[in-house]
Image 1 (cartoon, rainbow, N blue to C red):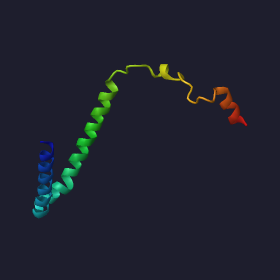
Image 2: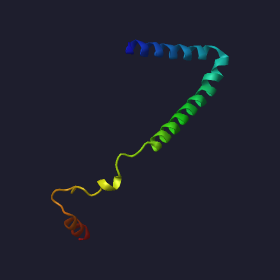
Image 3: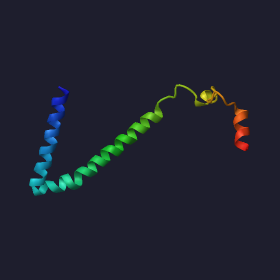
Image 4: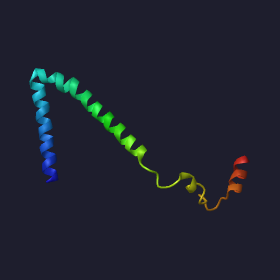
Amino acid sequence: MGIQLSLLVTVVILLAGWVAGVLPFLKFIFGVILPYVALAVFAIGLIVRVLRWARSPVPFQLLQLAGRRNPCLGLSRTNWTTQVQL
């Protein structure tokens, strides 16, 4: 089902492009109006997703996760600072 639907959509898009190239009044629609509509749909969708993400609650505080592990096994914080100062 999925591959047939993808093939059908591809053929419809190809035919729409071919028809738009043949008929002169459709060149303006496909060349000017449709790209602006696509850009507007993308921008509105992006804004909606960012706003939806911003409204969702955070399940943990980020401050609780900092500094829980030593990132390098062989280096402690004092060894690292003394090596950098040399």
